[in-house]
Image (tube, rainbow, N blue to C red; front, side, top):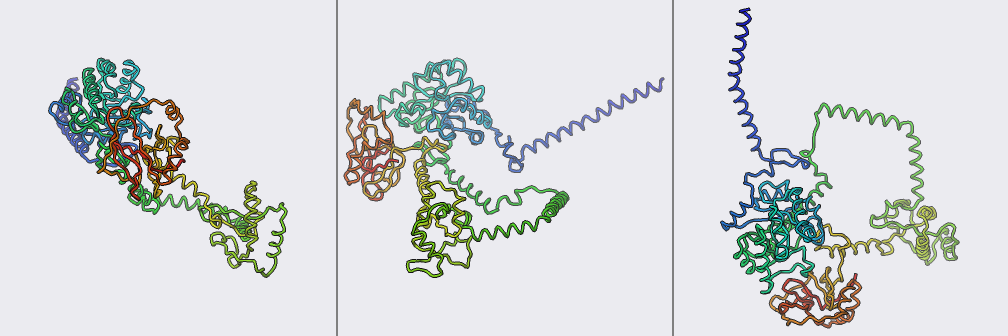
Length: 640
């Protein structure tokens, strides 16, 4: 009994001693594991193999502290400019956050630059939520703001609260932005009362561009500038943490910034604002022409297209994928696989041994048939389909055709017979040593009769059967290319849609006319809008072969607006057919007579224009206003 107790006591003491001695080992092991994990986290993302379906979290991890409203307030008090940029998906959101922007804006501009809509007003709340969630997944440090889409906050405070709550809960946004001045102050006040941070937006409000007459600079007159100041003060009083000033003259924006106690974020508002914001696609040069206020820091469109072309060329040439882009397998497994497929191929060969003679006889009969049949589509050039000309067997041949057939049966040739060489691409099915002789009358008769058969809907099979002894006449022989009209139409659509957002719907690609110089007939504009009142005038923003005379300025005095019921009916019935109303002006342009330009009514100030001339013949064709809109008046319009 004593021995058992002593043994048990020694065992327990030994276990305790062992546990105590193992504790330093455990600590050392844990330290080694922690050090290994730390070293692994310092490995660059380039040294790790990642997959497009599983983006690496390492690429979006930053040491920078999270930007909050308090951070933005500190930057404003220190006088440090606030940076803001748009993002529309996970990659762009990751890049904006990695670049160290203070604020990331999921703007409704994505409707045009990411979804291809013609305006920002068409995007829905569900679409905004989808893109906001994607940007949020790539944002770690930047302060995330989401635009409230058009039609989701205007009817009242309750609608605005519901929209904002969804953007913050489902879209993971930290604040919302809405457009409008003092008329939206009650709604903004209600949003801030329930704890939703609001970024205001005044000046040019893209969601209301239709009522503003387009994307135009706001606050260019003293009265309108005073209205912008009143809007800014009302939004500050309602509780906005900052205000976006878009397309506002620099002196006005600077004054607004000085009188407010909250930051202003400028976009086309000058350097006097507390910060700046741009659309990412514009500053990266992805869509060609950009607004005047935007600086293009890179022309990535050319680089991207160049890279895509290199990829296509590598695939076509077989240079990609190379050995370093392919996966291998163990040599032993490769040998086993080769033996397996070799055995399968041998079994397939054994199955076809018994039917080899039949195949040979079939191929011989096919080759004999090919010697008599006319050339097939594979022998013809790839840009047209061959047409076989001959009369149907059931048709009654006329006298000329009977004479032609009798001449074919004679060994000799009459004086009016000529030899026609069949093109090499069309004679592959005929005997290479034979010469085909066809009379000129028979040649024309064959063409005529084939055209008649085609119009009557004759089948290709019956036509081939009756045309075994006739040469094939192609569209090239007739000097006709059936695809030319389609190519011309595609070229025209490409010219019209060159300055439209990508993914634009076909029904949105239209123009009132194609404008040409009246002297040299050079095409000047493919995308224009006819004036509602002066139908011989056309407005456009994108032109070709035009030169602005910047040294000459024309000022038209302000003219009071007159009410004319006939003008309203013209505006309601505006379409491409309205070009007929400008026939008198077009006829004068074709005769070389300069048209009189009539400026649009401006209630605020006199209209100032620069002359625009054709850079080919130096003929004055248009005027350009201060908003860089071209007004064509001395042109030849062509309806499409």
